[in-house]
Length: 199
Image 1 (cartoon, rainbow, N blue to C red):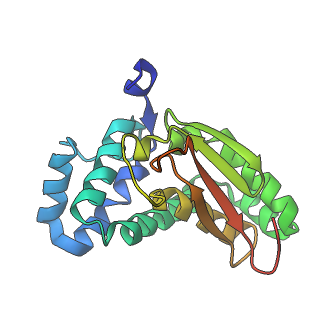
Image 2 (tube, one colour; image 1 turned 120 degrees about the vertical axis):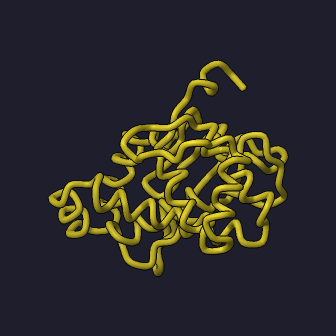
C-alpha cells in the first residue's frame, strides 16, 4: 500500500450503513465479531471521515464470511448511503432543481456534484466521470487486494443507482462493467442505464 493510501480517509457511511445489514443476518454478535475481524474497535460516530482501510477490511470480511449474501447486503447498504446523502448532503433547492430538469441536464448536474465529492466515497482511489452516465474509479480501496472473476463493487453501484433514480429519472440502474478485482482490469467502471434511453 502506498504512503498516500495508508493515510487516506473515506466517508463513514461505507461502514455505518453496512452494520445494520450484517445485523440482519447474524445479530449484534456477528456485527461485533466482524468489526473485530476488520480491526474496527470503535464504531464511527458519523461526524467525521474514517480511515479507508477500515471500510476496505469490513467489506472484505463480509465478502469472505458471507459470499452468497454479500452482494445483496452491500447493495442495501449502498441504497441506505444514498438515502443519507439525499436527506443530509444535498440541499432541498438543488434536489428540486435536478428533478425538474430534463434527464440529460440533470445527469450532467448530478455527475458534476459526484465528481466534486468523490473523495468521500473513493478515498485514495482515482475517480473520474467519463460522461454524465459513466464513472471510473482506479485503485478502488473497497476492493483493494481482492481477486474475483466478477465485479464486486455492489455498494458503489447501489449508491449511484439510487441517486440517479431519485434525482435524474425513475428506473435508472447502475451496472459495474469492469472491476479492479478482476484480473487484467485496472479500474472499476460504472454505467448508469436509463429505461427507454441510451446514455
